[in-house]
Amino acid sequence: MQGNRRQFIQAAATGAAALSCPSLLARARTVPRADAETGKLLIIIAAAGGASIVDSFLPVVASSDNTGIRTYKPEQIESVTGSAFRAVRKVNYSLGVPVGNDYAMVDFIKRHGMDMAVLPFTCSSVNHLIASQRSLNGNGINKGRTLMEAMAAQYGADKLLPNINMSFGGYAIDGTDAALPAYAKAEQIADALLFPLALHREQVIADRTNQELLEAARVVRTELEALQPRAKTMQNLSPIKEFLTFRQKVPAIEAAQLLEALSLLDLARFNEMGQLRDERNALLAKVRETFPKFLNDPLEAQAAMAFLLLRYGVSCSVTLGLDNLVRFETLGSGRIMSNLPLAFDWSHNSHQGAQNTMWRRLLSVMDRLIQLLKNEDHLGQPELGRMWSRSLMYVATEFGRDRSRSGGSGHDLNNAAVMVSPLLKGNKVYGGVDPKTGYTYGCDLSTGEPEPGRQLSEGDVHHVMLQALGIAASGAPNASGIIRPA
Image (cartoon, rainbow, N blue to C red; front, top):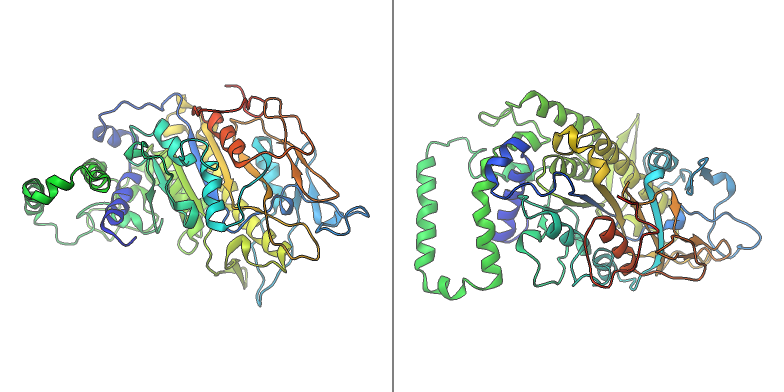
């Protein structure tokens, strides 16, 4: 868990809420479900390190006009009939052992291309920390709120933990709006696999014979705090108010009593656990089957948790993403490196191999998560439609890469945002890429028509997503050319 008391309590409570189901959650709520008909779901995928669009869905084909830039041979690229996108074939790459899975990027286009929109833009920083923050707050266009905070403020008032963040670095930093409701702030989860074990004050304790004593201690603690002079003088300080407000939520979270419903681990050995209802057991089995490497792969564990949090109405915004650690796994009779150090920023010299490896890793998990969302009813209620019908998935990343063949692959402001959602007019690149330079250009947001030479900003991308999610923001441009009519 994180290092201070507030974060520890948050992690514990996060686990409790994530195990909820509609029927038991209703007991803990006093606010009516606001999202049953119109609520949206947001999934942020943090592509740490700088994922390049021209090394994924807009690869540039080598020709006599672009010999000075990094390109791909025609046989390295796969196209899909009727699709606006292309895919780079697997790049064989090795670091002592083979690197990367066998997922084919073209399969993502085949399955989800009709819901995919690529919006070229130019960001405002190539500093990893700053650029990752700006990819989530649109460079401050909405009072400094992150996209996740805006989502939680709009749809999360009645949710136990509306904004869950399982990423790190700049992707885990709060926005700067002091007026943001406390409930909309992100709850940080350090380990998606283990945090459910901390969700209840005594449910995993072997000796639970002193429940009355524990309850009495809580009462006395509250009374003593009220009598402390320093408590009275400090009670209006923002961190203290936030801590006490959150602590008041803990009983409601514990009341859900659904640890075993979310945990991907086998909890049968913990007192009275493992007694799942058939439908919840079946759903958990489906999630485990979809992400079979959850025990060893944090990204798969995060995706599994993200789905369950959204499915049971605990959260409306979840953030997951790559880490910077080397990871190995068994593939067939051999061994591969499945995650590179520094993720998308691993190698400036073996740029194409590193980018290809990490894109295939990310898209494999995104593909399976989307398929779950497409197959499952919102809140388990068929009359509300499938979860995917109200979802928006956004690949957030720091920056693009320079295009020079001789210059390695240094950081570059020019790139494009990848969004996958039925809320957008999909199967389209909203702009294009100049085949002579490899640089992207944008579009007229009101029509969606490409405009060579036009450069959109982080704020433009942010406004498109806010409007698609039904969230008002001052100064918003008309983005009707990209957003699918309701």
